[in-house]
Each structure stands twice: as C-alpha cells, then as structure tokens.
Length: 68
Image (cartoon, rainbow, N blue to C red):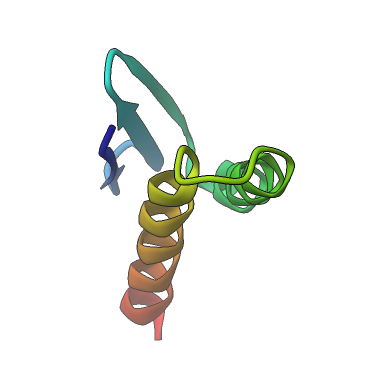
C-alpha cells in the first residue's frame, strides 16, 4: 500500500491517505504523527509503515525548505 501526504496551506492542515484510510490533521501535529509512525515501524518491522514514514519525512522536509 502506497501512502500519500498533502499539505493544504490555506487550511493549515495535512492529509494522509493510505488505501481506504485517510486523516486530516493540523500541520502542527505533523511531528507527533511522524513520531507515531516511526514507533509503529519499530514495533512492527517490515515494510508496512515504511511508506508512511517516508512521505511524512518528505512533507516535513518540504515545509522546512519553504520556510527558509
């Protein structure tokens, strides 16, 4: 399952979509969600949470670049 994450600057939110699940959260919650998925990846090794971590890390990096 591939994960996507998009940022809505007007709303100040990001949306995570994976298979049939999706969630929209305040951008200020991004670090917490990234920590959560990193912990899940450690608890449940394999590739299930890899794409979640990768897309959230990419979104965080993109946001850092746009604010510099």
